[in-house]
Image 1 (spheres, helix red, strand yellow):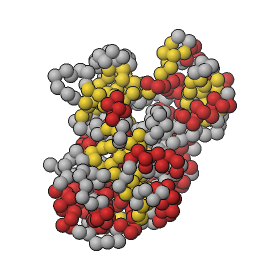
Image 2 (tube, rainbow, N blue to C red):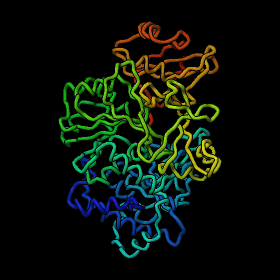
Image 3 (cartoon, rainbow, N blue to C red):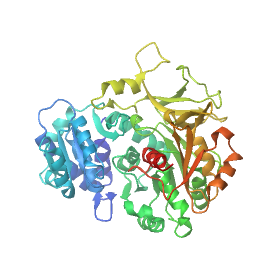
Image 4 (tube, one colour):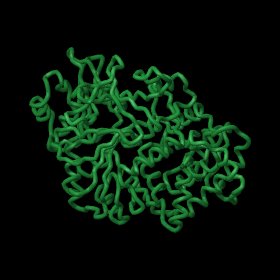
Length: 512
């Protein structure tokens, strides 16, 4: 029985010592080299963080590279947990995270050392990764640390945006991460033959597939340079050169390729698995990729950070019209996913089209939020369907319904449901309708509460406001037609590649 995620590293290093595990254009790490770096780094960290009870947070402030993953593994070797931070994040926000996290140590690369020392202001010790791994490995020390480990110890924490303006850190255990890697590897068929083309930043939980399915199965992960995603032809050539077989990208990255019709210029021949999630996948974009990869394995996944990144998946094995919505499917193994109505009553699968909140129970549930007991208690609540013994569930704040096949279909965030002209409206439903238009690259709706207006921002080289309104009138009730149309050059994105709805709303309200 596996109790520590490092057992994946050690197993792959034993079976495939000379195989490339993680790579970019500047560095390639084999499994044996990765293990060696992790042991040396873990020894260095453990020699600094001494005589403590339980796992302590170690902040990682490094550019995305194979060394970053070695730093993660080194922190785990030391018996602590890692917290990756976006190096592009404003330093004020980094300071807020440091205040909330209270890290025992900060690890950075040389290019970020001065910035981080200034931000830490002498309160937290800051060291470079190179200095930590320059020492020899103390195998006896590492063995004593491992002997104290249990599977509910934290493995990592990821910071997400908080509604109060203070970032919130979600802390996840080894048990949850192992559960994730085991069952997702099975569901996706990820194997030692796979080469994952990494798009997602490491401070975003969507990267767990690339990192840990590679680690578990002895595959290879190549980090795709972020600048290539703005030049799709070069991006696809890069994938072809590395013989990428599997991608787990956010829909906006896949949409960039489809918008420029780039697969006509270069179709990577090794690609076999295309996995997407984190936000709704426009069906028109899916159909574009499907037309070039008719025999590929397509999977839509769903799951918040608080449930270790995935709780449902849907293997897209049938045709969908551009105007249809691809389901999020059913639960992954060892996870129970169900819908509760506004009175906390269970919505049955036979109640087709009835919307409820997605709730989750299982080993994938995160431990909670760092230094935020009230927030943890609010989100990770007792299961209202079970009054026999204490049982935690996570209330996602997402709405969904069952279709006629019994598949879950994502509807909206609770906070994307609005009341307009006496009707409850899901803004993503309007977006999905608009996304089916020929020539529409992307469309996002925001609601102006003060003026009671639905505003649609859209990106298109060929469409205009009138054409879109006429198209929507044929497909939506009158009360769902946007009141204001706003054509923009490109959608603002978060560092994780999702549409930055907060920034978009601020911009369109200011200009409308």
